[in-house]
Amino acid sequence: MSDTIFALSSGQPPAGIAIIRISGPGAFDAVAALAGTLPSPRRASLRRLSHGDTQLDHALVLIFPGPATATGEDLAELHLHGGRAVVRAVEAALATFPCLRPAEAGEFTRRALINGRIDLTEAEGLSDLLAAETEAQRRAALRSAEGGIRVLVERWAGRALSLSATVEAMLDHGDEDDVVAQSDALKDVVGGAAALEAEILATIHQPGVERMRDGVRVVLAGPPNAGKSTLLNALTQREAAIVSPLAGTTRDRIEVPVMREGVAYLLTDTAGLRAAPRDMVEEIGISRAQAAIADADIVLWLDDAPPPNTDYLALHPRCDAAGRGGSAPGRLSLSATTGEGIAELWDEIAARAANLLPAADVVPFNQRQRNLAAEAAQALRDASGMADPLLVAEELRRSLRAFDRITGTADVEAMLDTLFGRFCIGK
Image 1 (cartoon, one colour):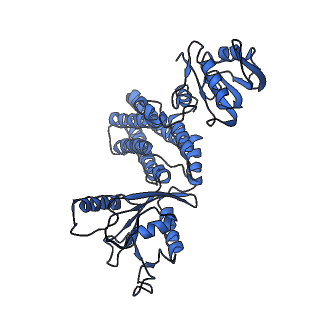
Image 2 (spheres, helix red, strand yellow; image 1 turned 45 degrees about the vertical axis):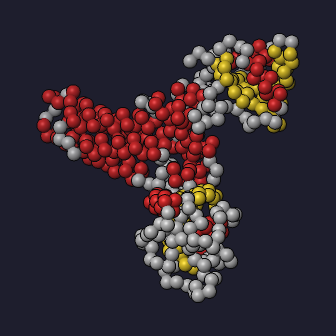
Image 3 (cartoon, helix red, strand yellow; image 1 turned 90 degrees about the horizontal axis):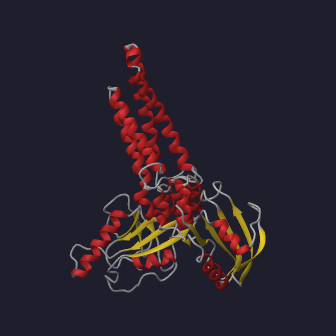
């Protein structure tokens, strides 16, 4: 990796200050050419930046010699006045130096990963941290970015490695030990593998980070003209869906993200359900409604008929309408028009969502991490059911390979472009 990269790492100008970050073997030469002299490492110093006969700016300059830097390389920062013209001028000057080029999305963090400054789980946590919109998302992403998952996986890997070392010793020195001692040692190994498998499964069966990041999916379902769109507007407190007295006004899914008390929700209004669609468009709308219901975390059922699934939250809507007053048994009565019952409905949604989200004191895994942890658990399960030390050793090696792939020690290049493509240019 011979290129030196640079990018604006602060917010887009205009701003009070703009920070351009430079990383790579040519970082200090470029800064010296612009600033005249280099400041002492890790000490901010005021410099006049010039390129040829052109004065660019008065800026604070910092240099950080590698490898003890964010990227593991020589790193410099130029703290400029945050005008667009200033930033453009400095970027244009940097682009004239040999082997300097603008950074690609996520390239600074990618270099940190390649140079061992962070592992893959920390990079994924940083990606989630940059995208966090709620306090719960921020806390979970920060725990991951600070190495919470890495520490847990390394502990699992250490235990698997210890078991593996015992089996390998049995294979290497089997003719020196008596049969009873070998049998007892193998029992300890398979017992340890079973215990580790149980611990891994208990962890990955907890709610994952996706539900926290993407939002709890709440779907409003029921027959046409049941008041679903009116309720959606009441829950979101805006006119998100068209409301009319005509049955079948909603023909497609309407999705509205909502942030409430630190939790992200995705509310979905759906087409009315009926056995005989009136036309092809309504049939497609009903099919999409059924798909949304199947994928939902919480279904709000707006129909006087019993819900098709007892897990649905059955409502008694339009309780303010003539003939619909009073409380229906086992149902939450509400009126989207008057607001009656809306606060109680949100309380019930929040209570159900709490059981679907990761606990505040755990580090939630993402889908990739869960899949690999499950692969390691399966290898440990297979190892615990075997009597041949050679086969046990191979399954333990398989579990170790899965752990390495979680942290990015092995076999991750194929997914790095997708991961770092979600980062901003200066990160």
